[in-house]
Length: 181
Length: 188
Image 1 (tube, each protein chain N blue to C red):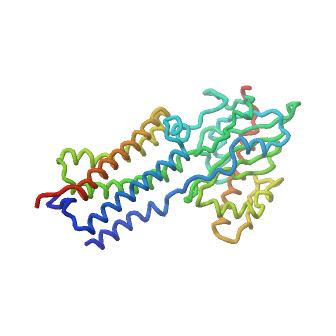
Image 2 (cartoon, chains in turn cyan, green):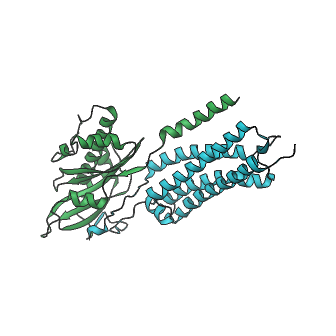
Image 3 (cartoon, rainbow over the protein chains, first blue to last red):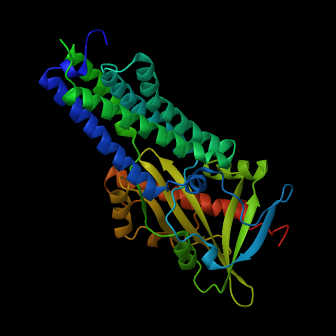
């Protein structure tokens, strides 16, 4: 980009880019671990945390209340993160800022990689798209249809795919590519 | 140039970092809470109540809080003869440091039998633990939380703040039970 190539960066620039990519990779692994332990990484786990709470008694439209006997075993015995609207707002604003910032810095590094501009445009868009699909999927799961929880998984996967491609191609340029002067 | 860029990046990152919610800490499962807060119960029932506009206004008037959901759930315990022993409901408050979820056990006349904090976050845990270690929840037993509750627990401001949060949730649970939970079911 504008004559700046990763392979021609001074050592300090290469160290900075490498450590940033490594740090974001470790952060992404930690985030994945946290998501898998706190919520789960299957669409059904995401759905149960985000979707509106369904009545256990199947209280019907027009009925003011209903009651049914339950076995204690039917009451949840597992830790479960309930992401209700106020928490969804908090999560959205923190993650939209932080993930967009990460996608932006990743993109800045990758803009200096030596790949075709079309490929660059496609790859640099992945973390941004992943973020939008991920957070948007949470809102759609909550307010449109629980079945859209698959978007949250798809968004996270898209972000991760974008990171892996950006990191792999950037590291190749940084340390293994010999650019003709 | 680089310095200005670094300052801008730090400024942009500071907001999300400060407002980030730490992972949840579960102190009790829902099942444990229901079993503990309905001692002596032989049979358990779920009662779900749709909140009318009048219900919401009544709750809002008494607590200053408007319920998030359009229905609320109570777990009821009964003895072998079918006598009601009390009810348990779960409520959360979403503070800036993350959610606090409390299970409140109520006697049939609406007094607090006991309360349990079932979920906090890593960040809020030390403040809430400090309250629990002081026996804060034991002080609630037998009280009528429909009257305004005040806490004297905790000298630290955050501990006191979470004491107020837990008291607020306890009061909301009691008012919700009084307004809607004690309503006989239209279908069994």
